[in-house]
Length: 251
Image (cartoon, rainbow, N blue to C red; front, side, top):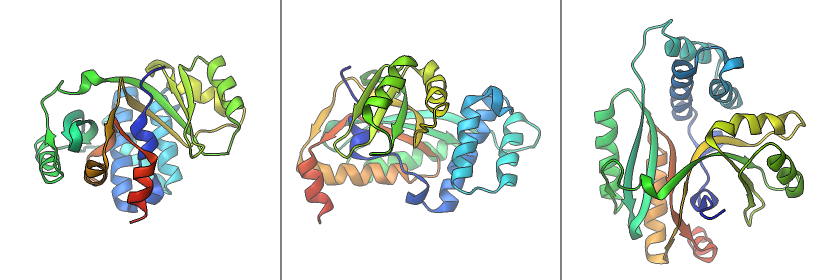
């Protein structure tokens, strides 16, 4: 397949250990609430909710917080109306950036993102300005060296996955059709091969090679966007050479 998720190989989506617990809880609570609102409060019949709850438990979120978030989603408790919105823009070097958010105040979110783009050397674009550059897939990530690549590939292909690739650091990525993500995940879990990350991901149809002059400012912009409370996931068509990354990391 052309157009692997190059940015995810440069900058992984932040996990529980990479964010302050309070900020992480805010993001997870929003995801649980939206999952319950769109698919119901029974996690057995709502794979998205089940995954969100598992992520919350993995971050040591108290059970009461999880239950309140579910009840807000199903309408059993009052709460702010949380919307799922996608924003698009350009970063340094002409890189396309696609941002998935969950927000209770879209005016605040768009103003904050516009400020982040402006200060980071980029610009927030109109709806549709970069979305056409991406295809949406389900994405499973497997920790480096945890499972043999051949085993991952065998299960992935048997369960209907679209593609399997392994990064230079040993992390293996499995891409699925959107509708098949949780079915493929369950095929792995049945044999004790749980992925470290499960998400819907926008994969660039083609990538933009980022030179050294723009790489640092792009990474800083992506970091600032990912750190925003309303942002769930960030995608890009950036491709940064590993030598440049190594130089920047050595600073």
